[in-house]
Amino acid sequence: MSSYERLKERYTAANQPHVFTYWDKLNEKERDELLQNLNKIDIERANRIFAKSIHASEGGNEQDSIEPLPDDAFDTTIGEENVANVASWRKIGLDAIGAGKVGVLLMAGGQGTRLGSSDPKGCYDIGLPSHKSLFQIQAERILRLQTVAEKELGKPEGSVIVSWYIMISGPTHPATVAFFEKHHYFGLPRSNVIFFEQGILPCFSPGGKVILASPTEIATAPDGNGGLYAGLRAPLSPSDPDHSVLSDLKSRGIEYIHAYAVDNCLVRVADPVFVGYSIEKQADCAAKVVPKAAPHEAVGVVALKGNAFSVVEYSEITKEQAERKDSKYPDRLAFRAANIANHFYTRTFLEEVESFESQLAFHIAHKKIPYCPVDNPTGETIRPSKSNGIKLELFVFDVFPFAKHMFVLEVERKEEFSPLKNAPGTGSDDPDTSRTDILAQQKRFLQRAGASVTEGVVIEISSLASYAGEGLDAVKGKTYIRSGFVGSVEELDALV
Ligand code: UTP
Image (cartoon, rainbow, N blue to C red; front, side):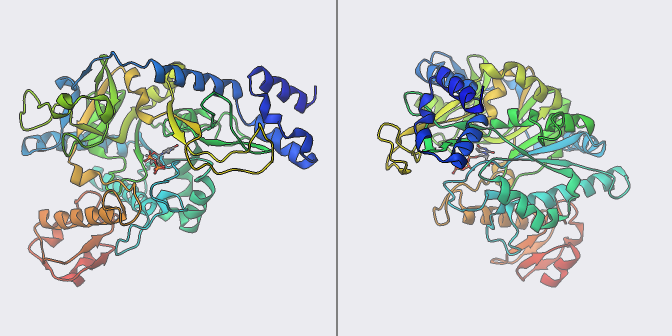
């Protein structure tokens, strides 16, 4: 049987024969292209995912009751009374980092449509005095954390390694890798930066037919940040099918994983406090959250849904629930654990995801998808003015209900969360708010270390010099009167 016949049979059996609409009009090269593209898609799996998502969206779990997080699964770092806990969690986390047991997963496969930049989000310059990209800021936090662990644990220089696994997708892959190459991996050893691809899925018409993007191509889209889980077990290269992120984590002895989203400029990469907290609690999965800014902030919260940990979207809770106060702390909201895509996993948990993955329903997003008509086959690609199709996405938090020991740690928003979502000038979660939030934090670092910063003075301290405000003892008693970027604590003297 030729490859054409085999695929024709398969796609026909899958009720998608229209992908061959243009076959008779294609030349040899184009036919090859179509067959190659069709071969890349697991059409039976895609159909199954579509059917399950539609089913879930129609019935759903609407009857599931929604309850606040139980006290014994929730802790906070906020408040003077938690200083000792934080120090003890940090020590546990730093020990694990020093022992080489901690790795980092970065989700950087999103297309950043709202931001509107043609480059991947991680390459974005938010306008800091140093003009560092988000990728560089994060890389330098890893470098600094390795140094902090070496110094505090008395280990030789260069002996602590935090490997960085970066998830990219078709649209972000080439530009991300090229950016890291151009910047020499920001000083990280290349062997400790591992790129891997999340999956893609076809885009469907509301009736369940895959959409043709051109006569030789099915329209596809990344399968959401929950594509992380399938991406972890996919071969890192076709020539070495047994080498995946999961096998790599194992061979490096990494047991604990911190996962986060690329667009948070305040992210504490491999945060020893969060990692140590999760280890102490023996969590298999944990979420870092921030307090909801206001009862009606449109953000998902981590809560119990039908007795299982879930992220409950803002639209799923009632006005009463949104405004309800915590029974123990009447000044706080009961449903306040805003989800920020910042997670901890044990490697064992990540290995187990495959066993329950078929129970996860992908989410439906109605989008404008450029298409090539099949009823009146002109061959031209049409850009629709309103939504005409469905993209299917799994969310990274969709695994929460399956965790056996889930814990939630609340941290201060202004210290740890400022996402870059929107285009410049939007006024919220945009490059200006990212920059302002980082610079305000740098000022607090200096003030907490005992320095004064004159009104209007803006100082950026390299992440290579301080990960979370540590190492700034030398600034005590000094007054900074000039703005600027410094690469080291010593350079700060020029700003006095
Ligand atoms: P968002 O859902 O905010 O998407 O991603 P986005 O692509 O950054 O922006 P919009 O919605 O198109 O404007 C949250 C995090 O999940 C990652 C993103 O890179 C970001 O770190 N993500 C999202 C993926 O890794 N893969 C995806 O398919 C989607």
